[in-house]
Image (tube, rainbow, N blue to C red; front, side):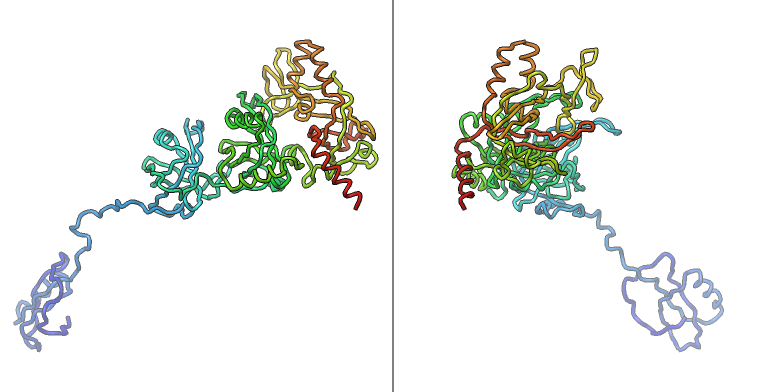
Length: 534
């Protein structure tokens, strides 16, 4: 061992490590050192051996100090304290799964019903509600099983809550239409505290309205918000779903400043709740504004919008868009012509832009191209076939639309649908109305299906069928048919050449029937005269 400094003082914490010992080393007197105490890095076993080897010599004793090791920072200080401070409130837009502690303050804008399910893990239940904060951020919160029992009654639409200790997972876009990639899953440790609505910083609802004309280019099954004036509403009908359960359906028409109208289909409770309110207002001569939050676009038979479980309807809402609509409608929009984008109407074509006479259908070869032609004809019904005016149809639903395929009656008395492979006790009746229409230029035959048939006859196909074949009231049946004759209508027609075996025929289908509005018709004629004079 080489000693660098003699008689140096001890530095640091002189703590003996068990692996080392404080021993005396014997150094020769011939050394230049006197009595000195040094720190040795030699283990105790080696020091003893060295001492024994030098026992016969005259030595100087050195006290060897053990290696210095600092104490642990956490030794004898107890367990680390848990951070119990309240989580910091952050905007919904800032939420992500990598945050350990967070809280949001938001208003409940929608609340779903409890849904029950069954899978490989057993039975369960789930419900969801939508949240909106002061920055306009939206997110859906979902509860399962025991958490449903804890929070379902506590959550109320319109109230503000402080929510923390939930987990964030990717949103399931098949069921979640909100503009957020995440969804909150509430757990047993989640806290949900109702807050007083002390200010109006958090809006009651958030809309992203699109005009009806934009729906023409919207993708099928996309979710949109729209607002318009209710022009008309049909009675509620009972529909049998494919699973054998019954539901209600009601159809109404909306129009807006874009000059377009669209068919809105209400399903389930919407029919008897908002649908009944709208029907009462229209019956009183009012034309209410209707805002639709989260309507589903369908491209079946033209473009239309339908309600889903998360849809919300607002009648005459207190919104800037409502006042704009009302001012437009009262200032002339009520009598302005609008083009329906539903029921196979030709996109982008206004009603009077496609006005034709009966003779022009044949003379111009309409319907003989690769695509159908869409025209409007002002004509009078001169004859209606009454022998086969309807057919028996399947009432089951495929998705959110009735099957409507023709069904056959079995020996058991039940009805059978080959498409759905189901049997049921009662079928539906749908119009297949063959009528002859004429104007000052000629006569032609047209076919009117369900909705357009109801518009012409004034009652459902089932009611007319029962009147003729079950009640055998020929007089009343004849009165209904005669009432439709020699009445002038605006027929919106789809004209398309179809193959019947080896023969090709031009088929003319009525997709919409409107009574002639004298004011609108006069305006159209004046505009037409003005164009001819220029």
